[in-house]
Image (cartoon, rainbow, N blue to C red; front, side, top):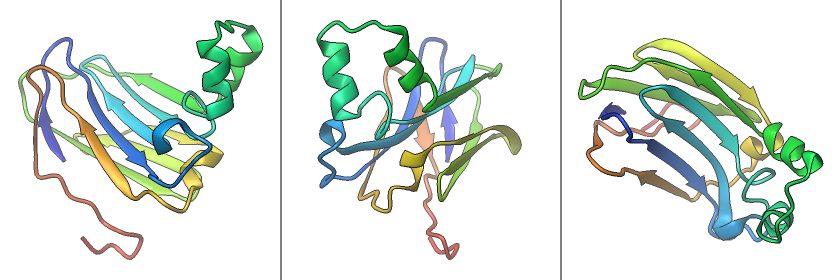
Length: 144
C-alpha cells in the first residue's frame, strides 16, 4: 500500500479472525507505522490474548506479564518524512512477518500467532490526516 502520514498519526493494519475466541474480538496480528517507528504484534498470543488481557484489566503490572507480551511484539526505529507518499509492504509467512518501507527491509519477527490459519478480516486504522492508496492483498500463490 501507499500512504501519507503526518506527525502524531499511526497507520495500523490489523488481521482478525471473527471466529477466534481466545483473543479479544478475534485479533490475530497487526503492523503499525508512525513517522518514527514500525512495529508488528502477534496479538493472538500477546496483548489481545483473552487470558493476558484479563490480567492487564485486573491491574496486573508484573514483570512476567510484560515479558509474555513483549516476546510477541517487535519494533524498529525509522524516520519517515511527513506528508510524503511512502510504500508499506509486508508478508506473513507461517509464523514470520517481514516488513518493508519504501522498498527497504525494516524488521522481521517470529511468533506463533502469525501462523493462525484464518485471517478473515483486514482492518485499517487511519486516524487524523492519514491517507492510504493502492491497497493490495495477495494470497500465498501470489494472486491478488
